[in-house]
Length: 146
Length: 174
Image (spheres, rainbow over the protein chains, first blue to last red):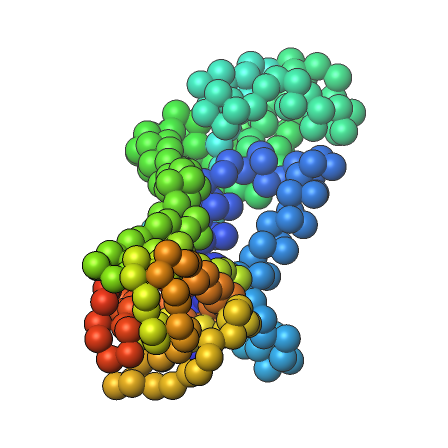
């Protein structure tokens, strides 16, 4: 019972953290972010199973996580009104070659970061961007001008 | 102007209509998350020890132990009994909260005797001559499933005569 409760609490906490930390921070995996992820994973594991080294314990925790993940996904699918809270919403950051400063500031994004994504699609100037959208995953979708 | 991508609504996704509060909710939640480590700095979640004392004519007892703990932590309680006059048979009586959901790793120096009285652990320290101190270390670990608040009063006896009582409790966080 204890393991399930701990798994539910930690799942909720990690979910909350990932929702409030900012989507860009989540999608970029710089070396420091990678280390941070490993450290977080270790901290979560210790709080989850503590001194329980049993296979049963691991199965309880993994099972709880799987069920919760499916539950969140189902809630998001079944109740569209919950979607913004559970998954977030995309934000338009560039329209017709012009950066929308207010939206970029809100997501702590710079034009340079948008251009990094644009260059990966062979776009050399922001003027060539029709739309840039910061997706809920933290990735930037670039749609070039026709 | 290029066509608006499917799934994008300018009012909602560009002008952020109806999304103004999102930012404040996020900030409030982030503040809430940030408050936890700040509270931890104030020792709210343990495990910094603090001193508790009780004195009577013949003897005094000093307890140095944390009042807040977390599951799985290793911790120590230090009992110092000072005899102001000859204490023939110093006995410590510990509430159930000292043992419930705890692992005792060691008690040093080992008491002369151990027993139980009315559900409480009794540690017989033996004779403490006038002016001398007896220091007892108890090294423990919290069981991960032990959560909540438990009484941890300590009574010091000389034989069957109560000399002093330290009133305290421990709060264990999950």
